Length: 104
Image 1: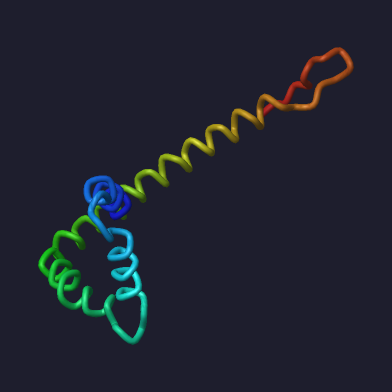
Image 2: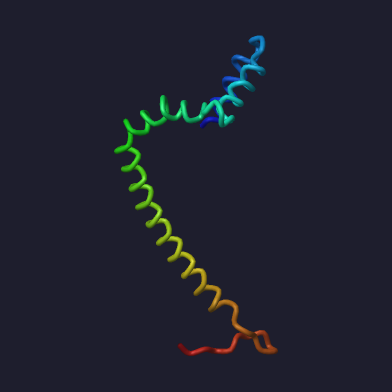
């Protein structure tokens, strides 16, 4: 999502004078430890947003975990079925090309 926003913003405001330099200064402000820009941005914008939607985020993570368990169980069943097919189809053959009979 941030990449999409950045590309859209680059496309729309790149014609402004000094856009590249201002963008570089913003990155340096966020990155440099003396300015603590990333901490300020987190404290002022990101933390309140996450705290406001914390219950929705937790509910979504629980739902995602439940779906992940379902998908994992179905993939294990499919892998077991494929393994059984390979076990029965790749038996050693005799000189006539026939698979020896295995009584189960």
